[in-house]
Length: 94
Image 1 (spheres, rainbow, N blue to C red):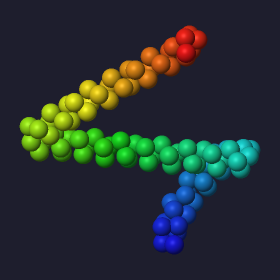
Image 2 (cartoon, rainbow, N blue to C red; image 1 turned 45 degrees about the vertical axis):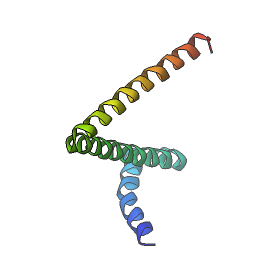
Image 3 (cartoon, rainbow, N blue to C red; image 1 turned 60 degrees about the horizontal axis):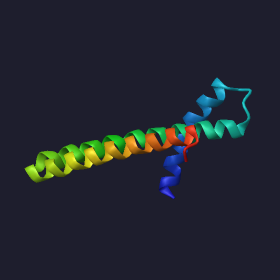
C-alpha cells in the first residue's frame, strides 16, 4: 500500500503538467504519454545501473574485466545481427 501511495504522489505532478500542456487531448492519450514517460525514466535508470555494475565488475579483477569485455563484444554483435535481420525484413528477404 505504501508503494501505491508513493506512485500516486509521483504521478500526480506529471499528469497535471501534461494536462496543462495539452488541454485538448483525450485522457487516453494523456495516460499513454505519462506511462511512456515513466517507462523512459525507468529504462534510463536501469541502463545506468547496468553500466555501473559492469564497470564495478571490470575493476574487481582481471578475470572480471575479461568477462565484461566478452559480454560487451557479444552484446555489440547481437545488436548488429538484429539490425541486419531488420534490414533483411525490410528488403523482403525474410
